[in-house]
Amino acid sequence: MFKYIKSDLPASIVVFFVALPLCLGIALASGAPLFSGIIAGIVGGIVVGALSGSKIGVSGPAAGLAAIVLTAIGTLGGYENFLVAVVLGGIIQILFGILKAGIIGYYFPSSVIKGMLTGIGIIIILKQIPHFFGYDAEPEGADSFFELSGENTFSALLHVFDNIMVGSMVVGFIALAIILLWDKVLSKKGKVFQLIQGPFVAVVVGIVFYVLTQSNNGLAILPSHLVSVPIPEDAASFMGQFSFPNFSAITNQEVWIVAFTIALVASLETLLCVEATDKLDPHKNVTPTNRELLAQGTGNIISGMIGGLPITQVIVRSSANIQSGGRSKMSTIIHGFFLLISVILIPRLLNMIPLSVLAAILLIVGYKLAKPRLFKEMYNLGWKQSIPFTVTVLGIVFIDLLYGIGLGLGVGIIVILLKSYQNSHFLHIEDNSNGKHKIKMTFAEEVTFFNKGAILRELDSLPRDTYLEIDLIKTRYLDNDVIEILEDFAFKAKERNIDIKLISKRGVVENPPSFIEFFKTRPKSKLSLS
Image 1 (tube, helix red, strand yellow):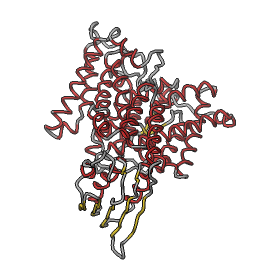
Image 2 (cartoon, rainbow, N blue to C red; image 1 turned 30 degrees about the vertical axis):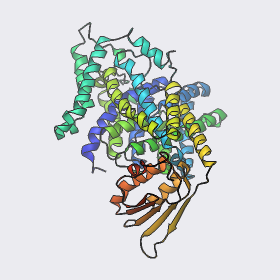
Image 3 (cartoon, helix red, strand yellow; image 1 turned 90 degrees about the vertical axis):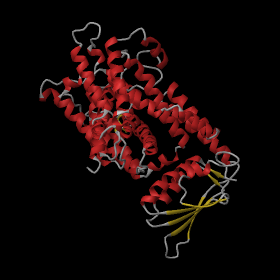
Image 4 (cartoon, helix red, strand yellow; image 1 turned 135 degrees about the vertical axis):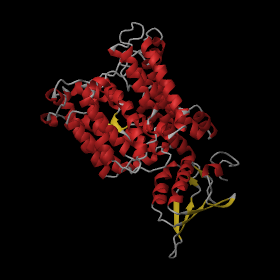
């Protein structure tokens, strides 16, 4: 677990600074005690991080559940009654894992996953711009178009310039400059700049700026524009921040309805995030989805038992982990311990961090998720990829995360059904080993993203030192999702000493350097092999 500690430790610090305001902001948006968000972040980091099979995924409270939590606390008659639903939701998630429901995660189209990542990136940018300039009407972590303050995402942007806090804006720009300088220049100059991450330096500078400008009327940053961690006076008051479920409410039918809702929504968000983080992972690790559901369920049981919010794997923290060079689950676990230790030992120091500095960190995370070139790449892949992608992005920006994904998935299914109407599809695997590790995989006439799970499972089960022959002679349509699976498998095949022979109408090629480049020359369309 400590093999990549030199990469995981700096990454965990960045994830900690990203997670801290999000935990507090999501708790505030949920109408729950502020400390409940911290509890969920700690449990998501330490417990779920330890049990999960994901090497780079980070779990914690999710903005997508905030509206459900806010409504449920009122409906169930109090936060302690709601915690019973969280515990029951965790048990239901464990049942999902036992029943192998995690396979659902393999059936989300690549275009929708990319649309989700891009949409979240845009939302991060749009939501953090007000915080960057010192307009903190909306809690950190909100992702819905319509805000609790009565504004929407774009009206809030219009009001920014009437509510600029000079001190917040100045330190925000300083922090942004430091992060960009570190990322583009200093990180390439020496190992010390890779060990000490730019966001950490930006936070330290932000604290120094706050301390030095307290007496300056023009640059002073008010407490409402700083991190706001609850400060206990003693051990008893610290323990008093924990809440416990009222199990006498377990017979209430409404509690069970909320529990199932939490389990279903949290599981879907987690599976979507798993698919997305695996796609972002430069090392192409594959997360076992059923184990992830078991880990998330265990985390929600523990979080609910001690007063925490519901937990899911979350893309903002996971992408920050990847972008900061995290390699193993240690970065997730360490960030959880940082949350725990910091709220016990240094809450007053944390409360000197300007929100605009943390907004600067998140702006960089958002930009890296929603780079403009991705729109051109998706357009070039053809309408079957670009339309679900675009619908997903627009749905996330103008409604919220789950609606956007639902709309994109609906459009993606319609596209596939239109194509499937013309040709049936199946996957046929023929084993010609005869005592040797030689396997022939013959693709059908039509191979779509519905075949992702089967193909991925077969490729992952191949033994080391295998000679794999992939026959595409009869294949007329090969979905872009399947091409990406082959591309990722080629990376792993080298580590497992698997040789690949590709047979198609263009000829025969041994160990193609890139499946994506090979299929770019398709004569009729981006996805046609005939």
